Image (cartoon, rainbow, N blue to C red; front, side):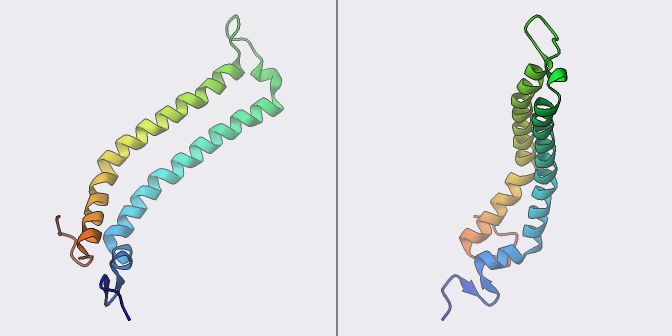
Length: 118
C-alpha cells in the first residue's frame, strides 16, 4: 500500500531527487565544496607536515618573537574565515534560490512541476 505522499514514481522526495533540477543543484554544490575541501585539507596537511618534518624552517624568525610556524598556524584560522566567507557568498548567489524552489516543490507535494511557488 502506498502512502498519500507517494506518486507513480515514488515519494515526492524520490521524484525531486530524480529531477534534472536537483541533479544540477547537487552538481553545482559539489563543484564548489569538493575543491574547497581539497584546498583546505592540503593547506592543513602542509602545516602538519612542515611542523613534523621541517622544524628548522618553521622556527625561522620573521620578527623578534614571530616565527614562520606561528604565521602558518595563524594562517589556518585566516583560511577558515576566508573559506567560510566565500561559501556564504557562493550559497547566497548559487544555492539559496534553487534550494528554496526544491523545498517548495517538496512541501507542496508537486515534485513534477518546477514552477510551483508556495
